[in-house]
Every structure is written in C-alpha cells, then in structure tokens.
Length: 154
Image (cartoon, rainbow, N blue to C red):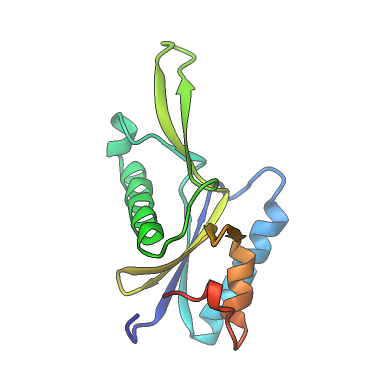
C-alpha cells in the first residue's frame, strides 16, 4: 500500500433497499466519520442487485463499472487466498419474454472496496480461512487501533 489517502467505496444494490435501510444508513454514517476526520475519501455507488456479463447492458457505463469492479475483486481474492462465494455468485436466469437463459452475477446488497490510489487493497464481504468477513466487521477493524490479523490487508 502506498502513502496515498485511503479511498472507501461503498457499493449498494439500492439507495432504498427492502428490509435493510437502517443497516445501510448506519454504514454510510460510519463511513462519513472517516471523511470528516480526514482519514479517507468516501463514495457511495449504486451498482444494482446483479449484472449480466454478456449482452447490451454489459456495454453501458453502469454495466462496465460493475464488471470492472467484479474483475478487480476476483483478482484481489485470488491474490490474497480469499473467496467471494457466496457473496458474489453466478446464477442462470430465464427471460420471461423470450425464454432464453442467461448468466448473471448476483451482487451483495452492500460491499466495501478499499483503494490506495488505483489499487484495490481490501474488499468485504469475503471469506478468509473459511470465515466470512462482513462490511461492519471491517469497519470495526478500521475504526480500532489494533486490527485482527485476518482482517488486515496483505
């Protein structure tokens, strides 16, 4: 990691998620404390509930953004011996109109990507050593002085 200021990117399926609004609002408020303290830049991005890697929507700005992030997340997971399953999973859907089947990647309702410059240095949620690591857990670690070793970016 370089000496650049940490950039925290909260990715959400919706700004008005069904059943998890309070949790999402609490996460945004926690992230705002980093920005107010001057320790990180924070952005909130809506990236939807799933993304199709094929077809015309993959060529839109929103589709490219989601697929680019997904590629970076997969590369980070492979390089750090972590798993993105079951949080990011490929599903097959059948079109109600044409009946054709197509793959789509289901995205978690909330994810936190941490960047130093352009480099992804940490992502939650993920599984490390068979144990799921949540966004809230990661924020606990970032807010504290001593980060547990399994939550620290390599």
